[in-house]
Length: 270
Length: 341
Image (cartoon, rainbow over all chains, first blue to last red):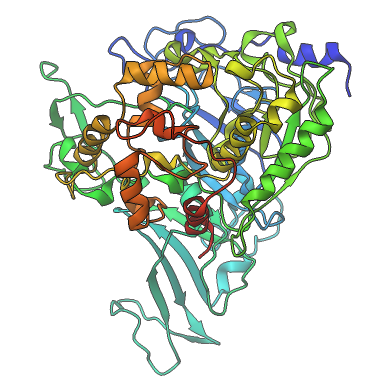
């Protein structure tokens, strides 16, 4: 066990976390701020969480004690660890492989908003955007560079560029999640032409895919991730996925997070 | 455990933003909650994914004279009462214990936490405290309304919500409380009340709600079949008539347990129906005779209920009230409903 003074000093660090009142997370009308910190997990340091704080309400101070406009990201990032309030909560959502079986398959949100629902121990100031760079790749089928100003080699396409199928889970309104499995090619024969819009007809090269509405009752990880703010990421599933590696994570996208809410103004503001 | 902060929406005129991803919605915000499918909260929120092996760990008690090893063994022994074939969750009790709560050597928000070195963390999901109650937790990050909370009754986070607590912060409190507070830890755990508390709180850690707050336990014939909010309110009204008035409930629980709760406590944990949409919840069905027995005599044979439950009902009596120390049929049906596909 480490020295007691060391442990106490980690809890008493000079960089004091501001309370909700100091941060001004609730404005004069009692509404929670719509501005959120950004929490980042880098690709090479998966056990480290970096917080980029935002000024939450007009007139409140930033971490340095200076008044800043609401919504401004002014303060330098700070590194959180297990001593910090909210660290374990965040990592439990960011790294489901730490507690959900199978424990050795990396997955989780690439981007999420957390937490977003009332629950025990929810708090006024831990509503953040989460970016986990370990759960997505910028080098994908769509982003390989043809021209590159660094070095003289052309960047090769991503390995997924010639995949002959893809699968994805799409979270939709009304509590529905759809599993889309599309076969793009049979060997070198493309199965889709541009303009195709009929639902998966068989053109003589076998089934071209399927769309299934998933029963979520026993899909605990899908439910858990979506209800905890996943926007895009990957999850493990229980339902059968013919032809797929059973111990592989499935990409998932919450399309409802792309639907903008109409703004409601109070009467008399116009 | 109490629910957290909830956003409220004021009434107002809908203003179209300049750039829109979808066509303007013409319904007022309140109309969105009319259909049951729109309300996604339910007991699924706290359920563990199938196949999870829940890791229980203990916080070393502050009282060094407590027979910690024996107490841990008893808790692990009582946990076995939840074993059911076909249920796809498992659990383990970690051998290593976390250090005692730090107390006032650190700032208030951290005093209930164990100390630890960064590279000496024990991987766990549920952390159990066996220290006597009440325990006061100061947490200014929770906002002024919830900044100071006093844990007077044994309590546990529900299911996977255990993963939200900070490292070293207990998620389950099983220590002696109320009229048993001055008993030794092991003596208390051996009593019926100690056994009930442990099995009950472990049930919560597995994700089970209170079965006396089951939406179908007390009928509400006029409850809306469409509007979740209205349905909940109707059920609450029907249930309020079944139990003693709130002040009488507080008195009765004080008599039974030796702890005085608040009127809000008893309403949240006894009289009100469990919140959430049944479409996204697991509720095992009651047998007809179970419902009849409950209606006639206030008897509910469930460890996921309150000790001496029937004493809290208008139909029941103190004389016939009993305490349950192991999962009963309805508790096991509930566990299977959640974890046996």
